[in-house]
Image (cartoon, rainbow, N blue to C red; front, top):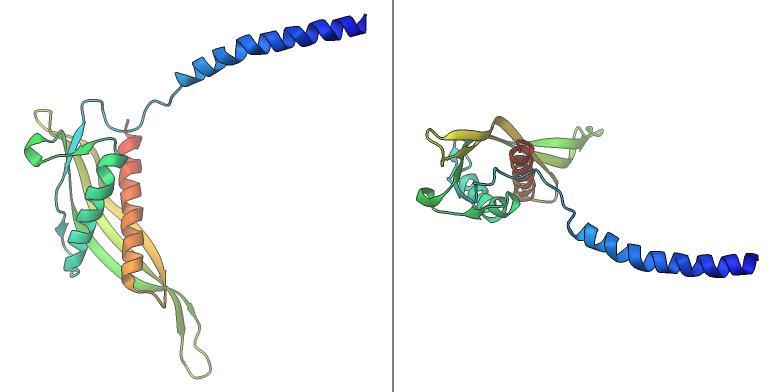
Length: 179
C-alpha cells in the first residue's frame, strides 16, 4: 500500500510542479518595484554650471562634468538643453575644506605624522520642475556635504573625486525619496 501511495504521490507532485512552476515564472515576470525617480512627466533634465563661491576654480568644471555624466541616467532622465528640459538642476558650491583627518601624535622629535586627509565639499542644490507655471521645486538641499578621504601619499584630487561621488549619490537619494 505504501509503495502505491509513494508512486502515485510522486507522479502527482511532479505533475503539480510542472503546472505550478511555469505559472510562478510568468507571474514573476510582471513583478517590479514602483516609486522612486521623478514624476512621470519629467523625462529630461538640464544641469546648470554651479556658481562657485570657493577659491578652487577647477572644482566648478569637475562637479559639472561628473553631474552631467551621472545624474540624468541615475534619475531616469535624459540630458537636455535648457529650453527643452522638463527639470533644471542648479546650485552653488558653498565651501571646500581639505584637512588632516587621521594622524599619529608627535614623536620625541616633535613631528606628527599625517595618515589620512578628508575633503569636504558643501553645496546648495535645487531640482526645479519647469513644466509648471510657476516652476515648482521638486527637491532642495541648502547644506549638502560630500566627504572623501585620501591617504597622505595621494593627492587631494582623489579625495575631491570621492567627495563629488558622495554628493551625487546624496542628490539622487534625495530626489528619489520625494516620489
